[in-house]
Image (tube, rainbow, N blue to C red; front, side, top):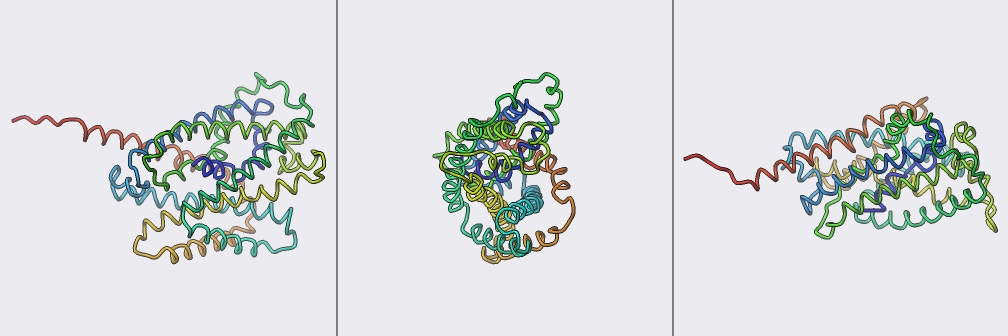
Length: 357
């Protein structure tokens, strides 16, 4: 669960976050990041407790007991559409990174089709195999990223991040936390994971996982600003990549090669989990259709969507403008409401009903 959360939430945030935070909160970026990690940590507790109330079941199964069949189908369709929109954004980012750093001459449509074929094959294997793969990806990415950030902190100018608290930037925190909905969105993937009795300590684990991700984000943002300065962090598109290109490590000449090699696993993980969630919900909705056919259909839809939006201008900015609202519904509103209704329903069943003679 820890690495599913880690790889899902950090799918592109590690690259894009420093620029966004430098623009919105400046040198005080670490404060709204920690606040957002704590708030979403509470949401993670709610989602995990909801799953623990219905052991062995996923949301689509117990949702019909709590909110009824109709609303469960409505929410499932919403999640499918939500992840289709996210896939457009993540595919665009993934193709841009691969084209800029590895395959500049390869046509983008080939990258999209081959990428979606790979993600569909992984989604076909199911969430258990994906979780095992994320453990390997997560450990590798974590070690490489932390090592690079430590090197950047050692070489960077500490004065670039001072003062750590600027009173004039406090008024920006509300808007900044709204911008952080995307980096912390994705907790709802836990709704497709059936829990067992062994997950009793999962609420605390989920909360501290979110806090750890928050501190991980802070390290990335602060180390980037230390190397580039606040103004260059704002100006450069992929500021984190540009920052560790400048940093020099002993013996290793190209830090960017190490990060980009393992950093791609984060982008791939984002697309894998998006494809998997859509597949899982589609398999529940069309329960009589074989999984291989549903996966094939998901591949076709994702590929067509990627090819259609490939040359659209400002598609990333358009998606980013709607993401906070989509995440607030998918990650916060739906799980919290279902949790409250499940609690009410459970109490009503446990309380004795008094009938008058």
